[in-house]
Image 1 (tube, rainbow, N blue to C red):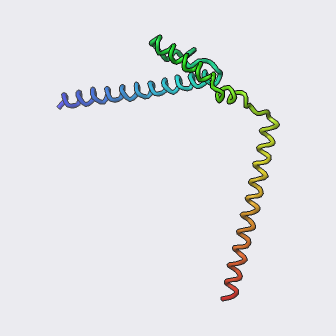
Image 2 (image 1 turned 90 degrees about the horizontal axis):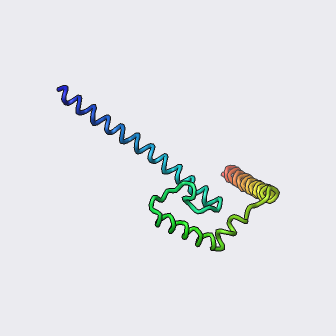
Length: 124
């Protein structure tokens, strides 16, 4: 009977160690992905600081692909379309006014529905 408990404890230990290892490897992958994303946003080839590629050929290919991606017009315009605070504030004000108009429209619709319901009650 003690052999069963020993085997159960060993298996539970192995399962626990595997779970902890999986959790930390997932965290490491998340951190690496965030670092690569930050590198791309900064305009640096991915892997410049993180070095996710152990094979030099794969690393060079990734740098070459990144340079080709940077030459595309969409990538360059994406970074140059940074809006100033005044433009952002104006967009927010317009959005708030739009929402206020929608709320007013909803209030009007609800008031007209209430009047119709009251009219129907009075008719009956």
